[in-house]
Length: 438
Ligand code: XUL
Ligand code: CO
Image 1 (cartoon, rainbow, N blue to C red):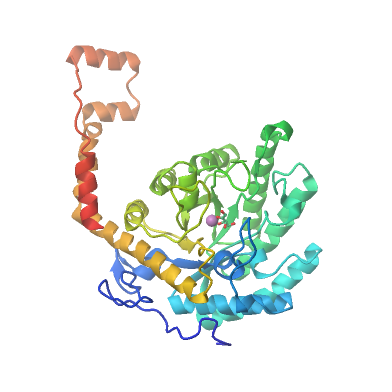
Image 2 (spheres, rainbow, N blue to C red):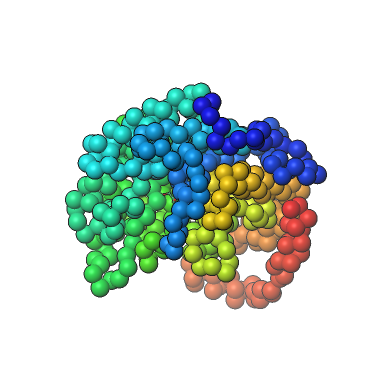
């Protein structure tokens, strides 16, 4: 290892729920088998290059507040190498197996596309060597199609086809880089794919542009033989007022309309779900129910602030319910839990990154253990099965099979003098039950 970016910190290990050591795991125990897989393989944690390495604490009101030695070199390639080394040191200290990056988290835009790509490729050689040495893997890569002013009016949905072309060229390069690095997935977050006002927006045209763009990415994935999963990450607003990829349901509609079901799945982010007015678990359940669950961006919002605060996860109950859906669907597949989460601006020390990840990892691991116990207990699943039991009976089965029309159903009600009575949903009883496991 080059030099220690996180000095005086030993690799963080599991010490159990009673431990009082601040930098230790109380719940995340990578080798413990949960629902048939080691916890590390079940959760598949990833460090996000943008929030944890590139970002230095700036916000819309103020400048960078974090001194980050790995970002201080004069030359962009030297910054990239230091940043990458710091990233692997962060992953190794935390025992996190994966990382995620945008092309522009590694190297900046330096003018022409060919110069920008050449610089990125040189930095990625260093990344590749670091992966080999450290055994860390790429959960996903993505192209930043929102930072540069050229994308102010969107990338795929820009009124200027030259911007569409530029974005397509950028994604081509980034998808190929992700493939070369053995990435498990490739993510498309809509960024500025939305609008501020309909006064200057042709919504129908922009939707078609977005559909076309996604089709081109799918085509190229097959052209180069990328075996990973393509993921779209829904978000309701921010940076635009209204994003076309609002939530899981809106993205499913896009996939259906542009014939992309089966080609693209979802990267669901906690804070994006809550901004869309949904529980995180709802978005997961909706994706699972429609066969498009892919991966997770782990974070949380603040219920009092209506924006994307991207705080580290802290609620095992929320995660227990999410895990119940994910485990029910057979697990993460190629996906994982990427910490799309950032420090608060006053947490200026590099060691704050370690505390943040430790807390987030423990919350998610504790939720996983709770979900396992809840499912093993079986009471909750039995309560759900019982609630729908009628649908397994003669009437329910006939309706589901599609053999009965409205006149048939009318006849059944009249002949059998049906008078269905309300039954308790038992919500409070079930809430108490779930709390026993968290
Ligand atoms: C923005 C966001 C992005 C995506 C990747 O809110 O979540 O970081 O995850 O572009
Ligand atoms: Co995200």
